[in-house]
Image (tube, rainbow, N blue to C red; front, side, top):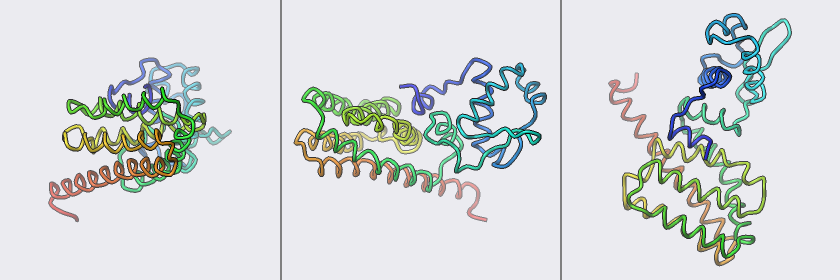
Length: 257
């Protein structure tokens, strides 16, 4: 695991100069410090800020351009691209978007994307999975139900389960959406993890076990439904949590103004 979720758990930041420039500017662009349409500072100013050579700075700009965050224009400078052009399937961009703050629309859009792919992957797994695959899923679910989980351990186990389903679909494109799954579980890690409630851990494990049981029975329709239920329940927990957080913030500030 080396993507969005791992970064949230470890809070690791790149140590080399290139990674630091990319990470800092990427976060600032996604957070709106440099809004879409704005022009980034020139090489001289950025080189002085980060203490890096022009070569390092230019390579960093190429990396950000590859993520569709910026675009260099002759005689204009380096412009921040519109949000709809950002590559949200990129691990970095998605991580920065989650770090920048959540809203109901983002959580709903993420759930919609997962619902478009993961039930289909699960149905393919019902067709393609071997007995060894199914035994592996049962083992993961057994670990998922451990009442001793903390936020990080249950998120890791949850991710392992969903990526295993994608792998068992035998469709390489299903694994390509792993970053979306990681983003959803990162949000859960931060806002709506079941780890603090033993009954909820058991419920989550039971809902995932229903997916495995449907796969074992080679019931594609039931597998699709069970996977959709897991995604929808997770999204609902997150939205409730965000609503409570927003309500608490309003109360602390003395109510809406």
